[in-house]
Length: 257
Image (cartoon, helix red, strand yellow):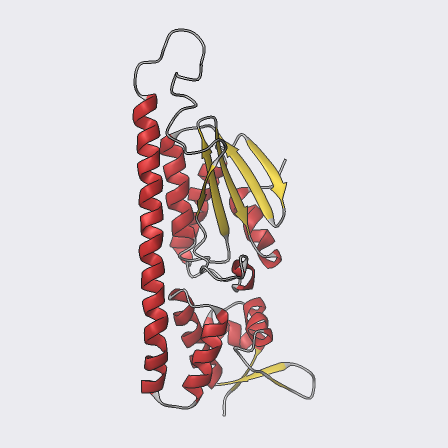
C-alpha cells in the first residue's frame, strides 16, 4: 500500500502542506503518525483531496464538506448525490442573489454617473449641485459586500476557509499583475483588523473595475473578504484575510503606509 509523507502528498496533489494540516485539524483529512512522528497518508488521501477541492469550488462550507465525506465513506454514490443536490440548489439561489446585488450596484453607479455627467452649476458645490445628492438613500458610504460567504450566523466564516488558490501558472501571474496595477492607483493604504483599507480617487469606472476584479478573485481565493465603500467623494476597498494569508495580502495589495 502506497503511503505519503505530507511533503510528498503536497507535491502529488498540488495542495500546500499548510492546507493539508488545516484539513487535518478541521477533520477533513485524517493522517496516521509514523514512529518518527511524521504524518503519513494513504493512497485514498489523493482522491479525498480531489473531492474536497471539487466541493470547495462549489462554494460548500467546511461542515458540509465534512458531512459529505462521511457519506462518501459509506461507499454509495447515490447517497452522496442525494446529499449534494440540496446543497448545490442552495448555492444556485445564493449566486442568483449575488448577481442581483451586483446588478443593483451597477445600476447605482450608472445613476451617479448620469447625474454627474450633466452641466455643473456655476460656483462652488452646494446641496443641490448633484455632487452630494446622488440618489444615495442615506448619508455615508454605500456598503457593497463582495464576500461570497454564505448568509449564516457566523458572520466571519471566511476565516475558516483554507488558504489555497485554484489558479496556477500564467493565470496566477496575470491576476497578480491586475491587482498590483489597481492597487498602485490607491492614494492611501491603512491597516485595519485582519487586512488593509485602500483609498482611491473617486470614479465610476475604477469602482466597477475594483468590484469586478474582487468578485473574480473570490472565485479562486474564497478566503479573501472584500468590502467596497462608495460615496460621491470617496472610494475605498477593504480587504481582509486569515492570518495564514498575510503574505498573499501584502503581495497583491502592498503594505500599509
